[in-house]
Amino acid sequence: MNIRVTPQTSAAAHTADCAVFGFSKGELRVLLVQRAVEPFSGYWVLPGGAMGDEERLEETARRVLLELVGVRDLYLQQVATYSDPVRHPVRRVVTTSYYALVKPENHTPIARGYLSEAAWHKLTEVPELGFDHNRLLQDAHHRLIQHLRDRPLAFDLLPERFTLTEAQKLYEGILGESLDRRNFRRKILAYDFLIETSEKRAGVKGGPILYRLDRSALEREMNG
Image (cartoon, rainbow, N blue to C red; front, side, top):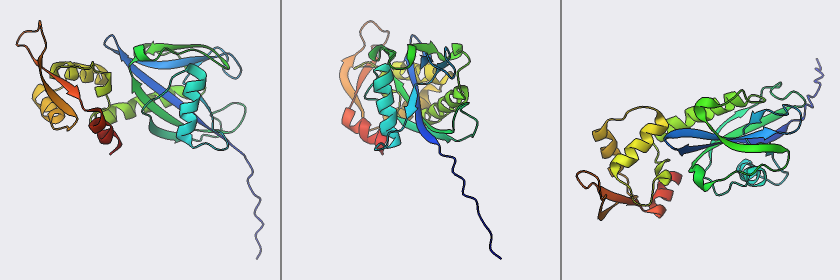
């Protein structure tokens, strides 16, 4: 018996959306952009865009961040791919999301293209986002927290010279929880990229020792 199969020809665009997190003034923030076109004109969303014919997805993510908001040179981590047939109200769009963690003071966003505004928002004060971007943001935040527990993602946010207490406070601020001092220090002192200096923090009780980063070793740890 011959079975006739009707081919499914639902062409889909593939996009990359980016949750760029920043830690500033003791709070975790996220970079959002406001759309100036339909669909979802006037809504805040994560910066994103369609993959070019000759691009890999991560290349798309980096290009989008540079073209739309002027942000470059980020360490990106892939989160997930979303393919709900109705996630876009006009056409079939499959998206892959990424996250990054940066110092907001080093990245001043500028709205370009189809955007009316780009700004950092406190994660606790994010409005209702367009498309399914609230879900994308929630998933990216969850993945960031997971990775922070076993990867040295936040060290680039520290000053050039820092104490172990400052490093712990940074992690506690991003994670939103207290960490055991002994366990935290034992874990981070095991990293090869953490270099003890001969300097001490002036004006602080006990004169705590200052540390610095071996950037090459940190990069190897992040990519290992």
